[in-house]
Image (cartoon, rainbow, N blue to C red; front, side):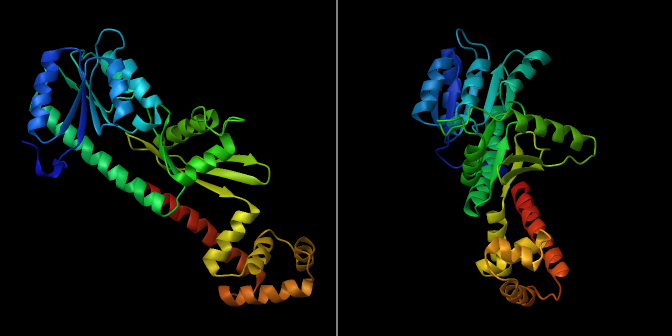
Length: 324
């Protein structure tokens, strides 16, 4: 009997991969009776073909099979964007530590020992489906609010999923020339994330990763590196244009007022700003008066301080939303 908190939606698609027909039959019947839609495969190659036709919600994978074993099958599943996020539960009679570690290193989510107990399998499936559902809800929320967030699998080092904005930023900064696509997780991101995890475990902070491209910067901040399923990373792009747009949104400024405030934050004088924007210092001062009024301050120092705090708070709010 599945606990009520682990009940699943009827029709969840489960793929069972095992080269022993009797094992397939027993698990198929148990899952079918519990309301799952079941696919079966008797080899690693067949499993990959099934996933290409229909992406399952969860996979039960035999570790030891002739030809392509379960470990290699799992690695290939994790290498495909469509199946990277699918929970994989290994079924194995190899319970020694090295084999368990091999399962997790290949990208496995969990494992059960053979002979498989149906009640245990059903409970684990339901638990992992619930976790996957919550993660999907979080991804949908991040997508809806236009956050640039990605998740990396701790065991594989691969990007498990990313919001549309994060995908665009990653392509802009790391795509292979002439392809527009990423070959893999960038080495500098992997190295930074490993150092961040090590620092967090030691109770220390680790600075964000800055990737500079011309006048623009892509900044990576670790939102959650304690989760064993996936590490959450928030991305934000900083540039003169991006900061100006942020100031417009935060303070309801006109574009020119935001440009003036941006250069005030940079420490420029009215004459400097006039030269940059192609206008007179007097006109700059008029815009600045409007900025002071909208921000509720009286000096350029106070305006710069308030604006920087708001910009920083906006970035931190994005990171908190990603880790929630």
